[in-house]
Length: 435
Ligand code: ASP
Image (cartoon, rainbow, N blue to C red):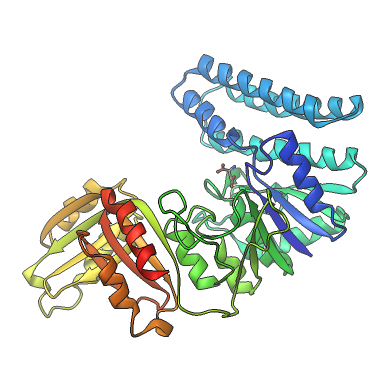
């Protein structure tokens, strides 16, 4: 069995939903993971924010506008009165749930319940579309098997043991299920964080030992550079899991950063496909090394660099552990690290607790903070390019004020930290020099 995942744009209009139907009805059994229609989750976040601020009328206004949009979708999506009525019924049910949230106080699980409605609606609408067109398809309720643990991490063991009985009860050729949403250890509705539907797909893939996971979006796969900033980028045909994971984490927006992990552990290949051009091969991510050399460049903004300088560091042990302890205390993960004998620089992408962190770091030495930085990440097989990659990268960086460089954590990645305003120039220069 294969797992297919379609993002918000792929189910973003009745026309696109029909394209999805044509793609998934190729006669092969599959589980289809869907996002909410594009824009919906953002609107649901807006509704939840209004309720958090106790602006109930604003929340009701946005709910009513969103409901009107869905009524139009239903009118256009189905041919028959029977299915139009079924569609409207589903819309009524889920919007009643949204209105219900506007009645009481803002509760701890309210945001998650509100956010879940997007995927619950899109999956019901697409299942009806398939049924109306004579295809046997069943809804597979992800709230019955997707689980996160106490640390909010996906719990694959639980998912595995829960999905099998659900699949046995709902026998079908095509299963349609919700991406993103799950339940937590209290059995409350929760989610896998924004963009998490990709992650749902590979978790399901690993749980059922799928033949392949296909992620369908509106671009034709990973490119060797960011097409929004660099001219003439080309699609990459093959990537290793480790290369794709680096790219997804360091900014290539096409995949949720955690997506590769379950697939890599279970050795299930992931193919990125384009809904607008279904016959194109896309990018295949697997453990098979087909080409070597440098593959791609990606960039991640919103990075903060912190330098801690201390003479106490000289030939001392335990210093780094103490510094890292501060970040651990504030649940802030570190992306890049570089050290000299008397100073350490590191980067973080979440500066929520920066004031607390800096206050505690003062104890170890002088600190210096640079905000608005970008990590540019060069991905590929550096070992195969041993003699030239460093020269080519350094040559490309001429004229760029580099803040940090990190290589050696793996042989698949060189990370370079630069001020955000030099991003476009850096990406272009690397592209010109490396590919
Ligand atoms: N609908 C969710 C979001 O917009 C999850 C997803 O699309 O992957 O973040």
